[in-house]
Length: 293
Ligand SMILES: NC(=O)c1ccc[n+]([C@@H]2O[C@H](COP(=O)([O-])OP(=O)(O)OC[C@H]3O[C@@H](n4cnc5c(N)ncnc54)[C@H](O)[C@@H]3O)[C@@H](O)[C@H]2O)c1
Ligand SMILES: O=C(O)C(=O)C[C@]1(C(=O)O)C=C[C@@H](O)C=C1
Image 1 (cartoon, rainbow, N blue to C red):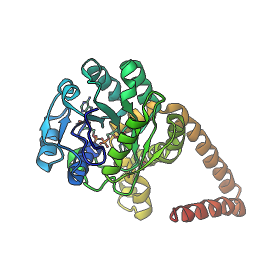
Image 2 (cartoon, rainbow, N blue to C red):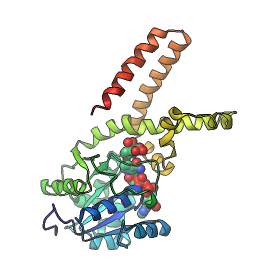
Image 3 (cartoon, protein in one colour):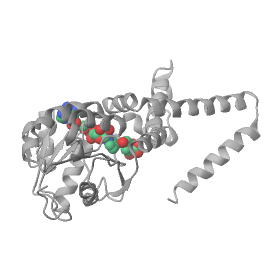
Image 4 (spheres, protein in one colour):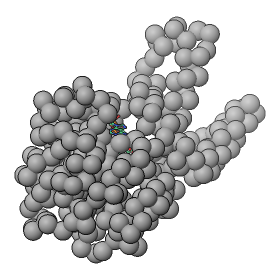
């Protein structure tokens, strides 16, 4: 590892997938002054040009050059693209290079890293910033996206304490508050608090759009509908990949949710006001309490 002082410089950092998350990370690292240069790998020339113009990256490389030149490589592509990225990187990956990622699911990415990187999997410290938004592409990047927000890291048994500390410091230098949990815990928790809400938001939007009087309804929406469906404007590719990658925990949460909706349906059909209010009171209190932490 060529990083001399991890607290102050991460050398040459390559971001693979310079979209909302990747470009925001580039901007944050450069603003923090903790990198010599940030290189970008992408699949769309227009998006990479935009990232260059915004100053999120200093140059464009391909994955093979990234493997040879970088001190840190951050995979910020949709989770279904991670395996291919590991496959291209592996033969050229220098032992000094650290890998981390921003993927919203961890089990599938960790499995791909172990299967493809083999012994080199010790160089990969999985991560997930809990910050983002419904917009996508470099044009949506924000320098302070990670500021004061959690980034979860899910270290592998193969990782050295030094590499875990380096990756922790790396995300902290972008402004994040880093927490460690296992990949299994991560996927169970985020199925409930991130993946399910996105699925429900898409489902509500799709249900209204597919209804006969969709236009009429959409012309009359208020803040409640807009709040609930804000995240239905998110990247369909990214969320397709997340749903498929984390399907077992998502299906568990979805079944639990459907049971609650079905119970509420019965209470409404039975004019059971007390039953409805009991559930709403508990949910309302929990939602108000959440603002306190
Ligand atoms: N958007 C969020 O709220 C959010 C939050 C946390 C983590 N994430 C995760 O971060 C990653 C990136 O999400 P995003 O919101 O920045 O998406 P995005 O669509 O804004 O950016 C992804 C970028 O990756 C590029 N890309 C796709 N496949 C590629 C490939 N094979 N090689 C090189 N580049 C490729 C795309 O062209 C795009 O520029 C995803 O894994 C996502 O699950 C997203
Ligand atoms: O801010 C938003 O719009 C988000 O949806 C961000 C959000 C989430 O909170 O669910 C989305 C996906 C992630 O992997 C992490 C964060």
